[in-house]
Length: 361
Ligand SMILES: Cc1ncc(COP(=O)(O)O)c(C=O)c1O
Image (cartoon, rainbow, N blue to C red; front, top):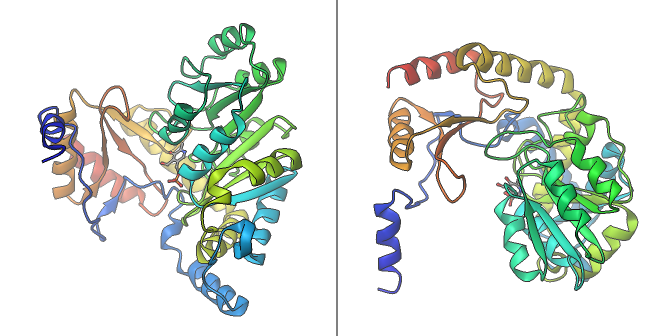
């Protein structure tokens, strides 16, 4: 009654969305579980034991009241040290972290610069910030032009390590441009942690960049780590500012203790098995290069579709054949794609079956 017309328009345009209960036992090429850790029961069992030993299972309050536990602190210390940052803080989710950081950092008189393909969780915050500009995707030149003409008191630039839909890697020159203009650089590593870098730590690791005072790294726990939540790494000063100003930290219950314990055990697991993971990632990249002629640095393979309806049709056909892929349509992307993620729980022979099923179309 209230929104019927809008819903009808979405249906006509092939843009209607609907959540569907996911079916186990299908080949999952849609999720962001890059290393297949969501199926790791060893990590799960260890986390259950850790929580039993700890003696509590719910955070019960905001981190600033009584919800900050030893489990959160251990995770923050470990993830900061691994990545070479001074300090870190956990957030309830990547969405909350992105939204919370940008809304908190962009004060009056400051100016925020986002890559035009930046994730919606950051874009939504710009509605609450007075001055925001978007620069052309991955263009260090365009960013430089905008920064040159900016009279923002503080300048804050937000980019992704690996872009979630295209699978593009961040242009390294953007680090230099941010430094040149004394800008704060927020790097969202949602899709780069666990998939790139010699230690699988993401884009800083990949480019061998030592974190500096102006760097902020955002990592999510619901993707390669196979858990749920997020963390932000930065200098002591920035972390303290977020603790004082980021609304999802102040006004939201602390992140889940169980998921934080899983995250800590997962990062240790990744660390111990990184050589194996790196080899398996290379096998999947070689498979896509050989069979689809797509050379990507990440594990995100966008297959272009002619229309949103075609994307839905192909997704549904593949589902009947036992493969789950994402049909991503505007406004999430400009042009519709099938988003295919050959995560490490999917074997090469399953990928061969997928390739043959696509050929049947
Ligand atoms: C680049 C990027 N940032 C942030 C998020 C949000 O993270 P979360 O799913 O933990 O809320 C996502 C999730 O899809 C993402 O792709």
